[in-house]
Length: 55
Ligand code: FES
Image (cartoon, rainbow, N blue to C red):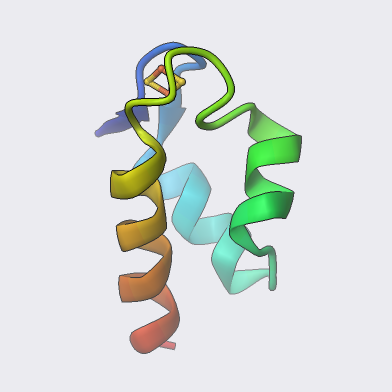
C-alpha cells in the first residue's frame, strides 16, 4: 500500500527502513516521504511508531 503517493513510497519500504534502523528524518531524506504535498507525514510517522513497537 502506498503511504506517500507523491513519491510512490509504500508501507513495505518504510517498514523495511525502520527494521534497518532508519528514523523518520532518514526515511524522509532517503525516499522523499513528506517532502512534496506533506499530507503523508502523519501516517508515515504513525507507521514508523507501529513498526518500532512491533520490533
Ligand atoms: Fe507524501 Fe505528498 S503524499 S508528500
